[in-house]
Length: 78
Image (cartoon, rainbow, N blue to C red):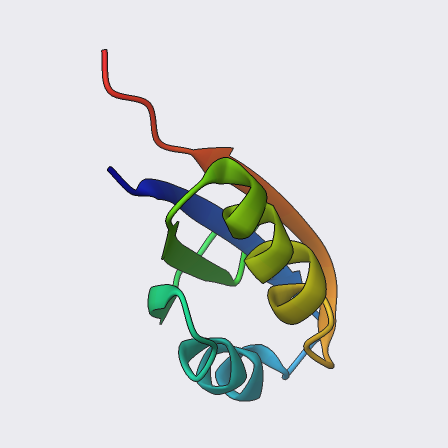
């Protein structure tokens, strides 16, 4: 069973388009889309484990140039 999460991303002004494109190219990212409100991009990511997901988020998504803040929300099945 895989683990999925939504990652809410805030970007520098005017950087949301290039940030979304860069994130979409990351292995494990299902999609990255522009949104309005306090966040600029919302990402859906998937990995085999929560540890692998953390590696995807910490080492790949958070290092994309133009990101100022992220909030990761793992999906739970109740």
